[in-house]
Length: 273
Image 1 (spheres, one colour):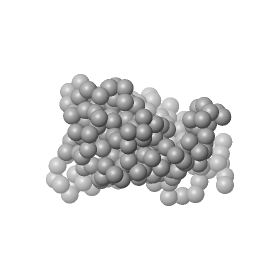
Image 2: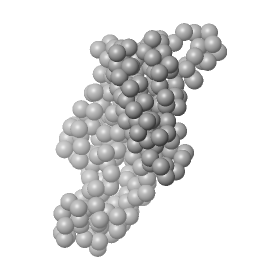
Image 3: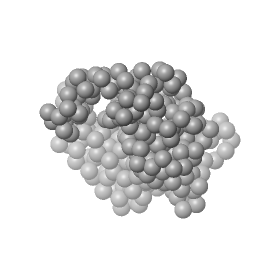
């Protein structure tokens, strides 16, 4: 397939434009070249962006796709008038019709991170990230009553990235605990977790995939051997069944899918978007 370039232009970080654009592009079998142009918050920067887009169009012989979340109308006007790409304006497509339908003018703020110093949600998110880092891999078992969710599973089953995603994306305080051979020998959950069963969600993984992941970290070790991985996974799943803990396999699932399943099952009262 011929090369196709996609620009994501925003007066903020560009995260919203890129997330929106990628969700649309995922419907097509293509691998476009991504270019994010954040902080396009002046007419001069808009003209620079137009020159870059138009140069790409000339070099590639086809117009780039341009997703924008520009709030400033003067800046957006420069892009609209000069850009030779296919322009997809998120605000023009969605915000303006909603203003008419709701009879309310949007606040036209630049991105989700504007006025962070005044945002309780932003500070809650930072607090959740710090909590999740402090409670990663069972490092700290204090204050577990403050957690929104506690993830358990064998080492390298996806607990840490899922915990951080829940904290960063949803502002949830997510602790995680590894299930280790000592737990299997006792056939009991770590004692610190027992009072918090309602918050616990388990992650498991297919043994062969677990062995591959562990071998990247500790090649040819007992820790990474397929036999050991089979034993740990079987023991962990048996323990979760005995304890009545909800769990899923992360083998073929993305972090986003894992997190969504956890939210559906745990249903934390406090969610930040």
